[in-house]
Amino acid sequence: MLKKILLNALAVMFVLKGFSQTDIKTFNKPNFAEIEKTIKDKDSPFFYTKLIERYTNNDTALTTEEYRYLYYGFSFKDGYSPYGKSALNDELRKNISEKNTEKIIELEKKILAEFPFNLRDLNTLTNALDKKGDKEQADLYYKKLLGVAKAIMSTGNGFTDSTAIYVISVDQEYDMISLLGYKFGGGQTLINNKFGSMDKMKLEKNDANIEAIYFNVDRLFVSMQKMFGK
Image (tube, rainbow, N blue to C red; front, top):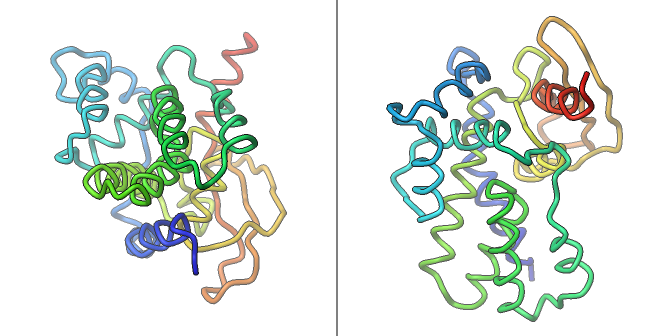
């Protein structure tokens, strides 16, 4: 029997496949300067304080555009790091049995309070809530998972360097590969060209004959430069 975490990933993959095949003209690369300005504007409908409050309160009316401002806007918040990780993740993965559903839910909610757009944790929490029988809450977090993933996929399909998928976290490169139904092939190449800085992530052999997925990592490099004062 397949684990529920895989079933959820397959459900997300079914929706995201449509995004990955979308015509190039519909992709909308994030303008980070505009995003930073907009999320700080109290008169903007994308003012971050209000948006994150809606997200935290499980507002199912959030649009893909609003999710874009939430996800990419998070990279301008204090404490953001492209390698950021909660200390609770180690406790969750090493010391908590998969059968201890209540503890998993407790820890995942704490982790997501720190890193609200972590795809892997959203998926794990969704599965734990579903296993507990709390279908209503499971559905809410599944919609969050799908909202974040669709926002990321709205930036590109990842098939070429010119249509790279924009991410703000290293882990989300691997998570998006999984959610799209592929497996990482173990090869990673950093590319710098007119389209920006990106990771070319080699894939294992697949039915779609996709050799690699490209992820734009411009935001990660800007963050690291600021961190080290360069």
